[in-house]
Length: 428
Image (tube, rainbow, N blue to C red):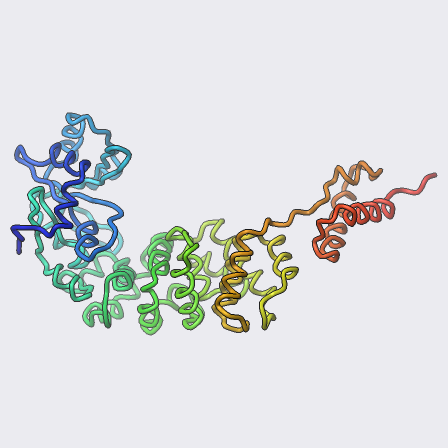
């Protein structure tokens, strides 16, 4: 163990946060200890934004709750059986977890016992860069040389790689995700050999856990540097089936992660990148949904994107406004944007970067076309209520598409009158 007697200024600023001060006043001292652990410290040390601040304590869960109540803090027993209590302060949430040690693992879950050793809690974690902790006096504790690994861009398992993986096979994908986010150069050799040896263990994981981890990985720009290794180890085909489009994926990720107007969530961007990796036709969406247990909305998004890509695939130049307006009408803005992103990444269409950017801007600002006919319009023209209304509306839709999705009220009236007259019963 090494403890710095003086933390870097950035870490000190972390401790100066008023909410963190409140937590330390409530939970630190009086025979117990509290530290900030994991990702917050890692991100501060490498100059990245801190999203969540997690803390570990020697307090047992009941004591965490008692102390929170004494300090007037709201709390939620989010994972109390595993020692985790979420504390709410000024609209922010903080997970506080009792120190633990593993007593049994099965590759998916761990049985733990509560403990009082920060070092024992640290060395049960996955990677050295995730095992750092910071006390209330600003002392940084590094039991696994995580700081030097972080500085070197080295993502390394704590202890023997294969043993760590056997404890939870999701760590196979986490290795690639953390290397994508923090790694430099090649993946740690022992870690990669452990992944290859233990990859069959992925079959023991739920498809939901794999989906969540994979989408996190694919959302990262750094996924470009790990996808080749994922493919070469056979993990991609094991998870997804088929042959990944690595070149298309690289083109899509480079574009989508730097696009200034994109503010997608992690899952949203990961799903788009998944499409770039292995979506060509709607049947691919079915396969991916089955393998990754996608939600209905995610499956629908991939299916629609595939339909747009298929409809526009023959284009060698940018699709005409009429062509993409039709797809906007049929499948919606999200699908059109996704389908065009896939086509751009296919690199089959001859267009400049500015032309593509202009097209994406138009897609985002153009109102989605709406069919300008309703059943009430037909009834007002003498068509009796009944199943024929739906058929006439379907015919009108084809007329309207043939009229290039016209918004001209005069043309719309002509189309309505023509269909109404041809479908009204003759006078007896």
